[in-house]
Amino acid sequence: MKRLKKSRISPQHVIGLCTILILFYLWWYVTDREYIKAMFLPSPRQVWETFKVICTEGYKGNTLGGHMLVSMKRLVIAMFFAIITAIPFGLACGYFKNVKAIFEPILAFYRPLPPLAYYSLLVLWLGIDDSSKITLLFLAGFSPIYISCMASISRVKEDYIYGSYSMGASRFQTFLHVILPSALPDIFIGLRNALSGTYRTLVAAEMVAAVSGIGWMVVDAGDYLRSDVIFVGIIVMGITGLILENGILWIEKKIVPWKGKE
Image (cartoon, rainbow, N blue to C red; front, side, top):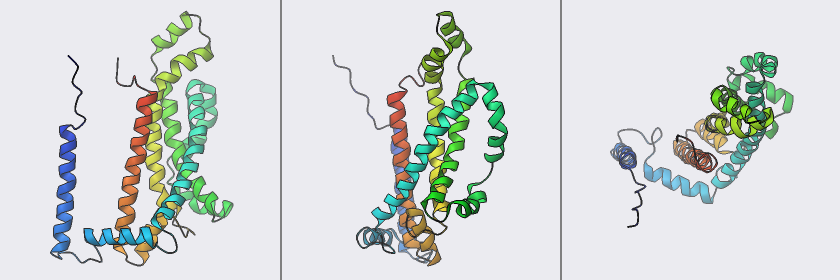
């Protein structure tokens, strides 16, 4: 007999969907009865109409797709450079204690700093164009990836390492075939944390001297009390964030299929 496929719809998914529907109903009910003024809480219908207008006619000279494209360009470039630098740097600091001893004092000082604390300095150095914004996003994404990569080395079981050495593997072969695969789950955790932190910083990066981007659109709409535009921006950013995070989870399942398995 053929093995029956397990249903992908779990009780937890049903509960989550019910929660969303209840919240949506409460939103509709409160706005329909006008318990809260539309300036503070627009109705779902008003948000939907605003969404269609921004998609077709645009907001301040750019459509919603245009704003998202600008923001995603900044985010992707920053995450790309954060990944290609933080992963090897974090693994090197975790594997070579002397390398960690050299750079850890600098990174320990930089990690707790909130991004906005040095954003003005970046604007002073790099100008008001995309260079300062991408650099801010890069710095926001670098630290979580670096920490996860460095910590992942210490979690590798020593039995695996010594077993590799006993079979004649060199230090480089042990790193490539034993340590790196064992560290991949933690590396992907760092990527997810970096993406969420960088995405949150996106609004701050677009607050200063910007005229486009989804974060800028939300901030600009707040200056004019356009709560409907703010809701559109927040909802779009939330959905986009979920898509990006689930994309990383999908890649992780393909690259690290052994995660959670003995």
